[in-house]
Image (cartoon, rainbow over all chains, first blue to last red; front, side, top):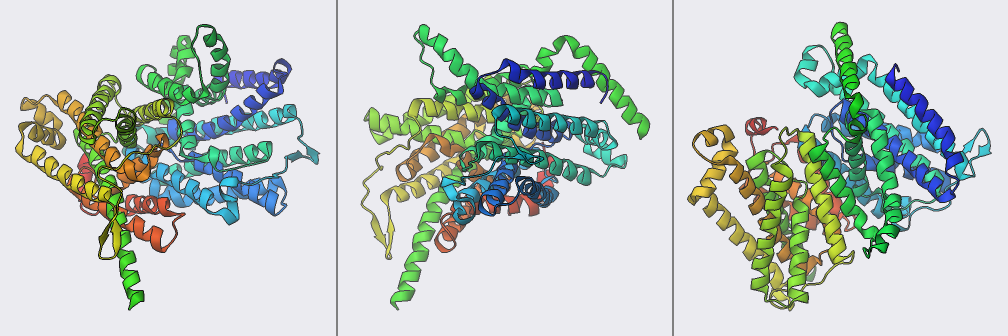
Length: 338
Length: 301
């Protein structure tokens, strides 16, 4: 990591350390913990969508697989949560490999539909395989996570832990982006044919980043299961996969920070809207949580129509020239290595 | 003897159910194809058109007590306007379209329609009266609802209208010309922007018809769009994307396979059957059973 990104990373660390001192309400801290889970999944998805240029509307399924592997192994077989999380990671690697090889040969709309279909199938199986997943009633008594024999009981502890994992995820993501593979992925995004002619193994790179993004999603699912201690199929429907894509797109497809901001923004939006509703009531407008879906869709549409680069670019509008010069220099280094 | 009779009746019953489901997939797939042919876009809000059509019809017939025919026409008109609005407000203004951006825009529209449907019609499922009675008829031992016969008849009518429109009217021929080569069509004086708008209008209209005829049987709710859209897309791919007659055959085939799977394998996994078929077709033969891989390469957007 260099320059602007390491400054951003430092700001993130300071933000993580400071937040629990500013947000003392347990409920809001809980909301921020959920934001961490979404952020983690979105960072992985951003690597796939923004950097490699491959869409997936199926990452909710990897979150579900991570959560359910953790839930089943810990609650039913009393495994250690860490071992269960590792099993979830291995499982999604295998699944992402088997799915990725045929799916990533597809492009654009076909890939979007294939991953959407995959997400639907996983959701149907989660609901229908009652013996394994508990069906619609789900799995209860999932244990809390422990760190070196010390159980993470309070929300503040879990906040530090989950956001620490997010920071680690961002660190890994930036290392990948600035590696040979990251530059290869961006070349694939630019033009697959050109990348192939330069000797980049397109299929292998795409499948690898698909597997890595699935691992991010799986870990986020496992952390979710250990935090709420109860899982049911409800949060893992196709809508969740769509929501993850929405978060990445709203924040800004081509930037990890954008994905992070999009994930935090949309995770906090329902809270902000319910907060706003109290003021709206004073004007005689009754706001209901049912309107949330409509608001989500409208925000996504408006951003895609008017700010296709996402809100991150909007925020850093003044620094736009810096971003483009960084991109240019990245392009130059990539060119030199070939 | 009785046993074989029972087995025969079962097969017949599943076949009827399958064709009924498949008719809907076929019409959703035709809607996908119209927009795809005109623009190269897969409209992720296609399933939402079906839901909107069904729910609109419920309101007009159940709350306002309009006659079926009048409500039918009003609903289709309403959806045609919705389709035109979608194209004018969300597709037309995009000056530098990329696949990813267009996919996300149509997803955004689908979220908006779904959210609006939830606000206006609530989360419950809605009952709608059948077109002509619920007394099921006997067909060689299998039971068949009059509504099912209506579905078959309307699918037939839609297919005939489709063929007539695209082969024997000037507008239909212009749309086909745009689908084959948009630049050449424009050179020949065809207003391609207008054809794109028309494709959204017709696609929404056909979605409305599918929603109207199936609602008495499945009882529509706001969240059904994604699944209907996915299965309809499955039919469209199976039939060769862009090939609407292929889509009709593939849709009915998909419906039959699904009904047989639900009857003989497991009803819990019924919805997964069509999706597994979709994935297999995409992975093994993305040009579909009737499409040639050459035509597909030309279309790749």
